[in-house]
Length: 445
Image 1 (tube, one colour):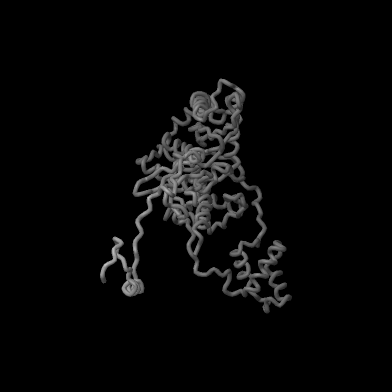
Image 2: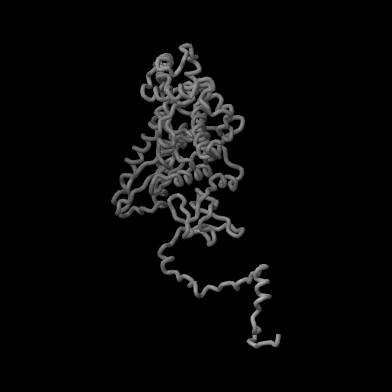
């Protein structure tokens, strides 16, 4: 049976590939051309391990599954056979794996000949296709990755607003104490309009999720969202939220130099005009809300109204000229439910669970048990159903617990013991009954 955690990682990785292709198709590129751009290209997963995007045939199948069944269509199916090959012996398969690990450039025919020489295989006419397919199933390197000559690296731009949103973070310092802060900026690719800026202490998933929610409330749902390799952008929760909302997720790679160029150019402008003036200034409030207000005032009243060199007009003018309708959600209550996740946690003996690096205090009676909590990423709140009521879990207050009086065991009211009888007790009591009664009197009989 496939591990649920592994299945989720695989489905999210496939969603990134599908998002990459569908976002390019929105630029007017054909489906085959969009797939051809990513074939044999290095791809980075959540753990920053280099992966290879599957071949064109597999990419076509993933897109068909996604268009037919949504995100659920990308969940890997159980396979009947887990053996790499039904025709090759286990001894030959182990030799194939060991040989490829030692010499990745060794060809399939040479491996077959060496196996015969070592008496691992008895036939030199062993099907090369069978061995090649087995090596592919085992994720062994069978071909050198070659880039096509003259690979198209031209910059491009989306035609309409909200087709592609670029997001990136910029570090800066603010206030007299030079507090470390980061501002996440959401840029519309077509119009260059800065849609939103949000400031946090560090680049986290929850800060990114709050920015996405504010973006949707203000401008509706985007078609695609481009992010870089920041840890807050590529977490499972961030990609899962975008998949629930139907937003294509583009993880920044070498295939998107134009995305990096636009973001970095704006970051330089914002730094020169605004962010560099915050460091060491006692007149600048270093609180997150105050800095968010300053950044949004700059983007909304200055940057968006200035003429952009590549547009020949201001971003606001370009935005107002676009007739593409915005996709405003019909039900905002249902929208917020997409930001809530259920998680299993084990309660410690001192009645505490850990979630997102925070110790949360549980109600009494759950020590040592596995519980299911609701994690609201949008409001950074955790809930638990206790006695039929939705209870907010608060962070453990160690100082208050140290001063809180404990109930002494001697003062605890113990229940009255229940007397138990058996056949042996009845026979003994009837034969050796006490000579005095309950009042201490001695009856005649």
